[in-house]
Length: 312
Image (cartoon, rainbow, N blue to C red):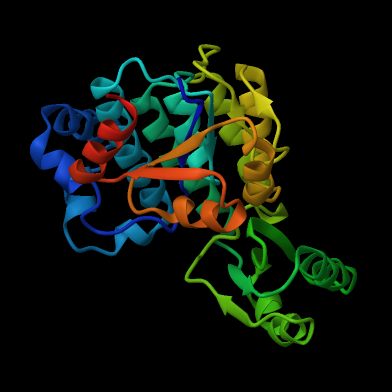
């Protein structure tokens, strides 16, 4: 039996129409959409399948992504019940999907949790001009040095997402990020692109969101983990409620070490399966470690391919 990492992407992977193939062909998917919509008061069918501005708003983006990922995961597990995960891993928001897939939280609770997480994050940034910037072509140490020097000068900017070699996202005050664009380029960055984000994820600007998230998690998360989860914060594995609350609370203000996490698990699994819209992590994994084969399940066609390859 192959050792499999079940993985889930984060915010930025959303598109209008994601999961529609599953919804139209599966009563299970339609029921999951209906129960999630009833719980949080969001019409997910309308939000995800019809053109709108809300899908780009953090409080709506996060539950929509998680819901589609859980639909994909549920349909896979229903088809291949004997396939077990060696471990679970997510990128930022995706770690909550990993927590859900592990069995430590019900998917309807998880949809509500990340909806409120997104709200907490937005509220933390409502009175400030926060933002995020992706840097291409610059090594981690140089990014960290520029950020450290900038904070010493009174600016608020931090490394936020370690995605792959030569691609790192920084977060902080938007004006500070803009002021550092040329500094990053002078240090060797090929591109310094401000993202269309109204929050600054994984940095100290989100400190006020930490305790409300932890309090909510304490009433929803349990100790029933099918397999360990790899922490974005530490790259280590955890499988208890207390660790989940502590680490996902920390994840709000500390960088996502996705690149480091993939390198940490590459020798312990035979392949990874990415669930949900697109294949963002599949692309990252290919550039982080070419030896780690990654499959993705985003619609019925890709589901059938994965089932044929590993379940038969």
